[in-house]
Image (cartoon, rainbow, N blue to C red):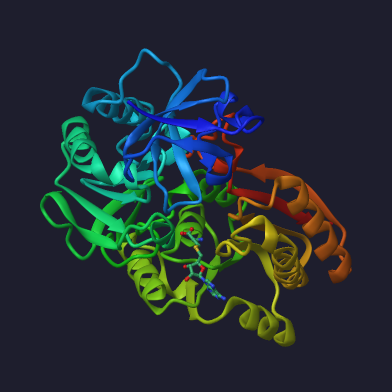
Length: 394
Ligand code: SAH
C-alpha cells in the first residue's frame, strides 16, 4: 500500500474526518505513487489515519475516503458508496418528482463526484483524478441501481484544471439524451438540456425553496430575477400568481423558460420574459416606478472564495437594495446566496445593510437552505453553500 505521512501538527483535520489534506500538510510521500492512486495516510508517529486518493497537481493533495483501516478501497467499496448515496434519495423520486442529486461529492463520501438524475437520464461530473479512474465502476453501479436510459458526462468544470484533468463531455452508458429531456419537479414539467445547459442542466437544489416561496404568491404580482429555466416562475404560476415577470441574461435560458410556461399550460398573457442584466433592469424598473408584491433574487455565486467575500457582500447588498426599493409595505423578498463563503449570519447582515440603504424596515420571516439530496457532512462544513431569507418589508 502506498504511504503518505503528514507533518507534525498537521493531522488534526484528518482525525476529525475532514476529507481534504492540503499539500502543505504532507511530510513524506512514498516514491512511485501516481496521481489517482489510493494511499494510506499516517501521522508523524506512524499511526494510520485514513485511506485517500492522491493527486500532486491539486491543492487538495489527498482526498480522504475511508477511516476504517480494515476496509479495502476496491471495486466493491466504490459500488457500496454509490448504492448507499442512491438509497438515501429513493423516497424523493415520486410521481411528481423525477429529478434529484444522487451523489453530492464529499457529502456522500465520494469526493470529486456529482451525479444528478433527470427523469430517465443521469448526468455526472468528475473533478478528481482518483474518481476518474473508477468512473466505469461508478457508471455501471448507477446503471444497476437506477436502470436509466443513458448516463452522460458533463465534466467541463474549472476545478478539473486544478486536478490536471481535461474537459470531458460525452456519453458513458446507454443512449444519448435528446436535446431536451422532459423532467418533472414539484409536479411541474421542464425541459432540461443536459448536454448544453448551465451547470448540469437544472438547479435541483432549489426544489424545496421554489415550493416554499410559491406559498406566498396567490393573486400577487411576482418578479423572478435570475430565473434560468423558470423554477420560481412556474411554481408561482402553479400557486396562482396573478402575473410573473422573469429576468435572465442568458438567451437560451429565456427561450427554455418560455417553452416551459407553455408546456405547463400557464397563461402566457400573465407572463413577461425579459432578456436583460438584472442589475440594469432593476434600476430601470425603479426609474419607471414599478412595484411588485414578491421578488425572487437567485443570483449566481458572487463569492467563489473567502478572499472575495467582502467584494461579493457589496454586490449582494446592492442587488438586494434594488430589490427592496421595488416592494411596497407588506411586500416579500425571497433572496438567496449560493456562495459557500457567505454564511447565513453574514447574509442577514448584508440584508440589514441593504434595508438601511433602501430606507426600509424589514423582518426575516423564513430561512431557506439546501435540500436533503445536498446533505452537509458535519466534518465538511464547506459542503453547505445554499442559503436564503424570506424578508418582509414592514
Ligand atoms: N433561479 C434559477 C436558477 C438561477 S441560476 C432556477 O430556479 O432555476 C443563476 C442565473 O443567473 C443563470 O440562469 C444565469 O444566466 C443568470 N445570470 C447571471 N448573471 C446575470 C445577470 N447579471 N443578469 C441576469 N441574469 C444573470
